[in-house]
Length: 315
Length: 228
Image (cartoon, rainbow over all chains, first blue to last red):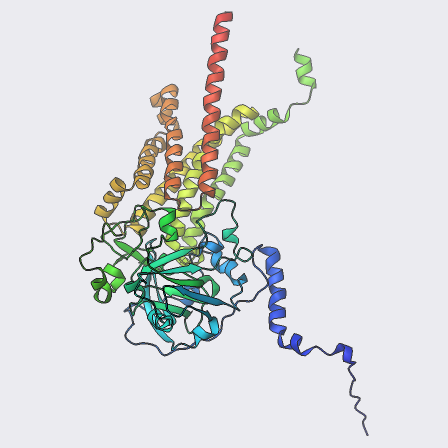
């Protein structure tokens, strides 16, 4: 009779349950440590990218196909991680996005701090929006999120709320771009919208893209998407949303007022001092063969917001 | 006098100069510079043929930027030749100056044409508006215009036709081109001034050295004149 010897494991060698459960983050930590040796700034935290599937809203389907995901997640402006387009993809994965809270405050009846899990419980939908950067390139992105006005309904803005101010996280340890000897811009990054713009059904509080939670370089865990404005208006990695009576000065306006106005609506007839805005390059096209559309193609929905306004003066 | 010079070992400088006087050595070094100089355009061309995304998500931006930076850098290298010759005493370096200058022009031409084609899609009225309205484009365009006669007159034939002193005077315009190039780069930079600063420092260094050197010689000439 064959004798099978069952090896006995001394209790001291049993892996504690929590270590076993956390083995992925441990491995990610090790990978991060290795990566950190090569790239100072990449820290040990693993990015949290999980499936985030929501029903597609068929009302938002531009004629162009969605940009390749790899492209949209490797070519980003997120100066907190560096000014090169490749920097965010390189350094942002080191940012911890759990736990995460967004403080919603200011001129509201019920100010509240939302945990990211609470935001994920809103009724999410997928919308494919055109995305137009002030640098004259564009992409087409399937976002997952919900209308910002739904969040507003939960906090009940008062009649004094005329503007909404969005603040991006400022995490010195995890953001190499904010540690430069001379600050690239006045951190933290602040953006603003007029209340009617913020409450417009196109304005999306966004938690995911391409059926997954946002990669850090694209503004995880929660960002703004305002498709008829230049990309920099769509602030990333939000920690604070304030309803305010007075118009804020956004970060780019503070940095160069004659170049970046408060509205920054996509407008082929108003040139930026550096770039003609008449045409754009739909990436990865090499030729800027596409003529830019008024309000990035959303004129029908948003032009009434600016009725009677001089858009050249209010650029 | 003669015997001491013959017995002491030739200096490193003299040996380098002697080597550079040999046709084979210069030809080999020129081949190396040619290969290095063609590397960026070869890489860009290869990527365009096989996979433009090797150049990043925005290949055109990479091409316009790379060719512009190479143009300015080759121009700086070519302007550094004279100070280097004077400081090190290695006169043979002059043999590489024309090649470096022509590489600068080559990349400037690629830079301009990729802007015209990729960024403005060959639409002439938009290009003209850019040149008139946007100072950094105006300056870049001026730099290219100024470079063109220098590239054309870079041959031995033109040096002979113009006469060496007129030719030298004409080619001092290269400093103006470099200055315009730095301004062009500075004005188009948004928030990151690392490379524009490096280029600025390099141009100030070569130009500054020339100015100081000219003054030193003027003083020496005056002194010698008085002594005589």
